[in-house]
Image (cartoon, rainbow, N blue to C red; front, side, top):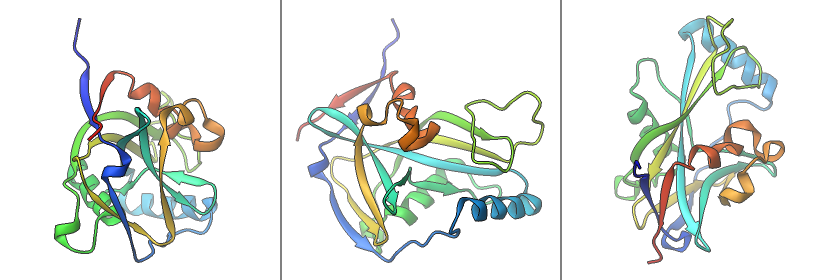
Length: 200
């Protein structure tokens, strides 16, 4: 039998959290975001984005770190790649921009692991799919989710206008209404990993 890949997860209490300047959203509404995506598509072609799955543990159960905007919307840390940018380098850049401290000494050592999911946006709409529909020859976005192995202790600087939440896998599972299709299916994507709960 093939061995599962091991992911070490450390207690949430091992990590320290501070704040930094707000990271303002470029768009005030979903419609604005899709309109901007359309403009960028005309200039640069398909949008490629990367997001990180950062895992901690609490009560011996894996939790994922999510950024909360306002009272309801949650997202994984990450974002759009620059044209031609390497995915791993781009994800590290985005993670540092979202959660890194203001000096090089306070930037976590991001260990980007494997890609666990690829999602496609066929049109300038909110719906994304874990496959590219066969009739779509020019998808508008490709989003890849990578597991990020955290060190035993790290410092995260959270923009003042955002909250960093540790959400248990059982809360995410099948909870499309609250978290959307991408985040709510992460528990299934992680089921092939073995979580090594380290209680240091």
